[in-house]
Length: 253
Ligand code: MF3
Ligand code: CO
Image (cartoon, rainbow, N blue to C red; front, side, top):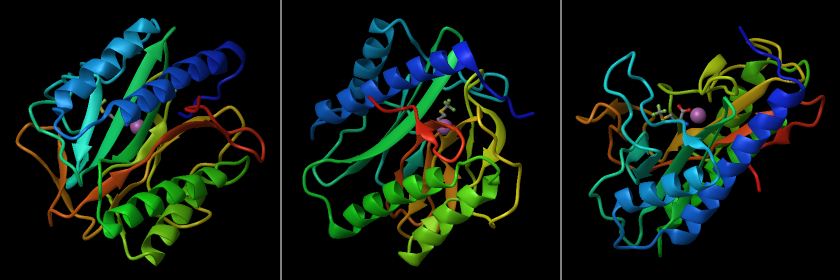
């Protein structure tokens, strides 16, 4: 079931989403070569708690397996998403995806960015640009009476026209009362297919895009999703509100 949000619920989702955006901004300013990914997790969790929020990912998934152990997902280069913060050192030339969720007043916001550390290759730069642009093209389709796969098709078409590939195994999702709600929002699909979008739906749209093959596997830590070919991947995500013809991005400052 897809929830329609109104009034106070939207205000609360907006508030959590703003904390998400502020946290990502702080992380982007803080990241340096030589840092361990765990240091970024500390910065994120401290900031979220200073705003009276809770890290929404911590403890997530206990019902399915090993609960996610951190506030932040930090995914470096060939890591696609769900990288567990730890001892991995960030180097010049890396691209690092940072994904954060916040819950406050019982409502959730969720967003991700990929950041370049020092000098990166032209190919990685292009990957980041194309992935971010595909997110905005997807968001543009999130309007009243469009269908979920209008978003999917817009992302896929743009990404593949630039020679990159769309990860199949993970999708965007409804967000708000829970971290993951209906509908599932694939980043590949066909226009005109899927549930109709209505004002008041809040969605997390999140293309995960690979330089090489779209195939991925889950690492030994049971969380980190990694490209099979070892080539780099990028991830951008916003929480948005469907509002007539003009979607509102909530994970902005
Ligand atoms: N943005 C990701 C998602 O919506 C992050 C989830 S991490 C998890 O699926 F630990 F919460 F699963
Ligand atoms: Co998400």
